Image 1: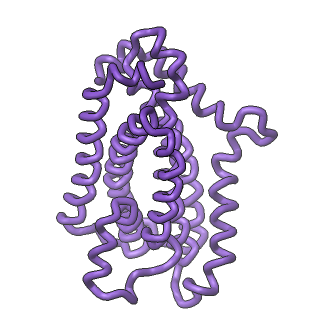
Image 2: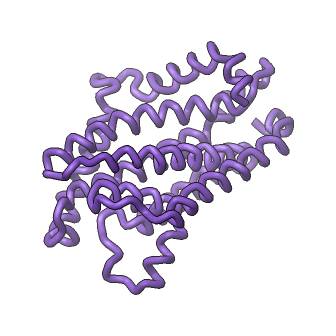
Length: 255
């Protein structure tokens, strides 16, 4: 895969540029929306939920922002990836290029947006009085796992969307369900131990929890936590790769 990306480096670079700029085409503020959009979403959620869930919680804005940050990256990446094949059918049906290039370019575009928002998140954390330690470097691990997980899920969704166009609406319902199950604006401490463990069955919550452990608790998660985070990423990648290899030629007949 890396060899093919290197061979088609120019095409891949142009796809990333196109996907990143296309999102803000003909908007007055342009790429500034990559920061303003999550910022305004955060402000709305903070106003709505702070009185209900964050009254007695220290650093509630950072708690809320970390959940929103990870979840927004997940939804943005998977939604863009789902349309990667269908939207680029005019290219790969005429030119023999690896189809995963289109999906990867969408993921890089989402990752750039995520990186910009992450800088804003660190700024909020500093203003809110969060102590920065060397453990923040460990955030690279859940980010890497999340990138891999998003790519794997994107491969699965983009393949399903080629054959079943209803997937777009079904995925919208699923992401709404995942949002409520990811403890973005509430804590799970009030639940029983079994229910708290059940939350870890949600990969998105797992990555959000990792962020909060480092930033808010100043604690590096356990080895089991690391293994589970990697397992979710590797399973999603393995399934996505299998689907792409199996249905690679059939994509041409359905797009």
